[in-house]
Length: 312
Image 1 (cartoon, one colour):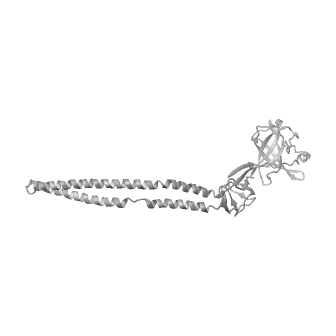
Image 2 (tube, rainbow, N blue to C red):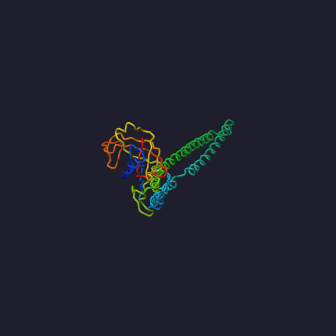
Image 3 (cartoon, rainbow, N blue to C red):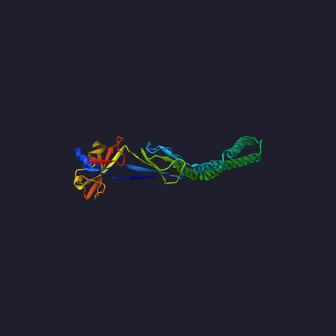
C-alpha cells in the first residue's frame, strides 16, 4: 500500500540578520521538502528477505523484499493439479470412431460386390440363365447394405457430437480454475515488495525475519534529486510571482556564507492563510500570506528540512 505524504519540518529563523549583513536581500524563506512515499506490505507473513538500508538509493521497480507466500503457492499448485486432472476425465473419440469407420468400410465393400453381382445377374436374366428371384434377393441385400451404411455414418456423427459435448462440459470447469489460479498468482506476486519510485530510503520500519501484515509500513522513500522549497509571500509580492518564473535560492553554509541555487516557481496557492508562527516574510509579520513551492535541483548538499531563502 502506498501513501504520499508531504512533510514540513520546524523552521529555524536564523538567516535574516546574516543576509542583511552580507547585503543579500531575499523576499521569502522556508524549508525544503519532498514528496515522500511510505511503502507498505500488500500481504501478511514473515519477511524472508528485506536487505535495504536507510540511505540506500533505489531504482523504480526494484524488488526490495520478499514475504513468505509458501502457503499461497501450495494453493496454486492444488488448482493446477485440478486443471491437469480435467484432461484425464475427457474422452478421446478417435478409437470408437475408427471402429465404426472400419465397419463402414466393410459394408461399402460388400455393397460394391453386390452391385457387381446385380449387373451380372441382370445379364444372365436376359439370357434366361438366371431367375427373377435371384435378382430380387440381390436387390434386397443391396438395400440392407445401403441402410447399414447410412446408420454407420449417423453413428460416426453421433459419437463425434456426444463426445465433444461431454468434453466441453468437462473443459468448462477449466476457465474458472484458471481464473482462480491467476488470482492466487496475483497474491503471490504481492508477496514481493516492489519499490514504487526512484529515490533514497529515509526510514526503515521493519527488519528481515519479522512478521508483517497487510498495510503495515515497511519503509519511507523520497526522490531527493529535486527538492521543493515551500515559502510564504505577502499579497503585495503575489503580483510579482508567476508559475515557471526563475528565482534564486540561498542556503546557509556557515560563517556568514551562502550557497546560491537556481530555482523555478512550481506552484502558487490560490488561497491566503494566516502567517505560520515559524515563518518570517520580507515585511516581518504579515497577517495573510500565500504559500509557494519552488523546485530546486539538488546537488547532494540540500537536505529535507533545511532552511532556505528565495529571491524573486
